[in-house]
Picture 1 (cartoon, rainbow, N blue to C red):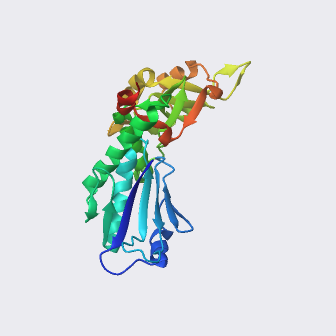
Picture 2: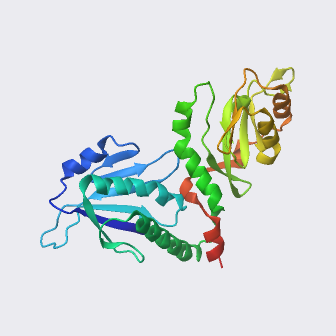
Length: 286
């Protein structure tokens, strides 16, 4: 199940060369034949633009289509809309949107694009969950925070002048439930966003066994570690804690050394399209 949008110039045509030139060096796109695939490794969002030759006898010819799957977390459309809008603006296109609650034929409308995809996406939840209720989900506000953080992570890392680490937020299957997580190796100076759990790689802070340190990874829950982040932060970056120090504060160091190591086999990574909006999942699981 997917959303399809058809596009053509108000005047003239788009050649395959112009199509390829537009996407050739555009961030997150790869050209595969007549398709331009968008895939953002940071957020997990993906969709595709495709060029089509005109068929003989075809009256209404739309040289480019946009396609994005349904049964996805809602932030997919938030990332897609600016890309669609810029492509349409660059070639002065009109659209044909045949979806229920879609734009129909005519000028592009970003708000209607978003609403049309969301409507179809909800129908996808309803249709698929009926026979496949075992899915991972998180509340919409947590999914949106995951997406927004990873969208800005690269820029934030570039803007920080000090030697401070900006981790990505990742999605994990932890004890059968989807959780948000980020890494905090050896409690190095970092900007730590709110997540369910922190994965703390311990090398310098590894506990001693038989008089030597043994590297491992420990888990800290947000409720467990947040008081220390609040206490030792230099400032806030939105809701994230900015920690900068020359050496790890003793209180943080001792707290992390006391944590129990985890078996990484108990943690499985989840892709963005595997974790759905909990509100919609609850609405349609009978």
